[in-house]
Image 1 (cartoon, rainbow, N blue to C red):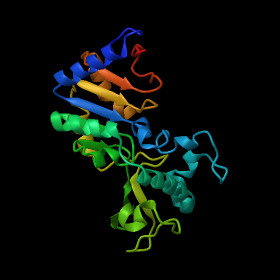
Image 2: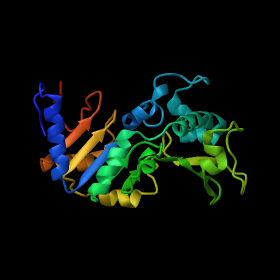
Image 3: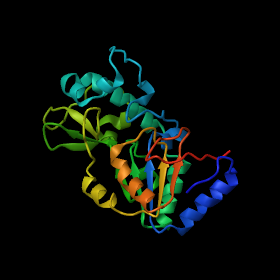
Image 4: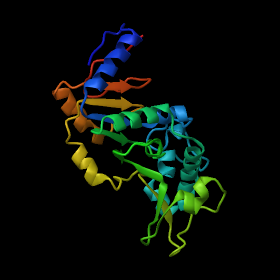
Length: 249
């Protein structure tokens, strides 16, 4: 799907609307930028607002929020997990999340892959949803089978408490069911993800993604090979798959 650089906004919007109308299967891939209108910072992965800046402990946020830090100095890792959790719980899904859920309800062969951990897609009503990096709201103990939610154990990240949180069942360390830096932590939807990534979607949207994640490229390469439309909605161009750059005025 290509437009001249000087194409009008109306022409671009009309073409995208036609693509949605004609598509039988649609894949939305959302990154941090999708939640920007909810007031959340567009951090890379789970860090970005801190990216390139040392924490109060004098270490990069990628180190502070790593699996190694969670194991060795869990109070440091949880300090920044708490900040992100607090920001997510104070915010709410936005119109973009609602529109995606509405399209899914209209076209049942629509799927949503999100790189975010804020849970907004689920809250907005998306059902065919794969949360690739997990969720901040889901918690579990690293030492036993105890599972809970942030609402139940942490009052939705709203009340100050001693960190790190401790398992009420065995006294072990509690952590969120999400990917930390240095982890290859596919969510509990891994089996579904492997099935969905092999679908040839008629239309793919890339929204608010600031970098090339290797595990999102398979359906993109397939769409490119089959000449199916890919719509990228980003403030900056994502240099991906050798696509030519076209932008509206």
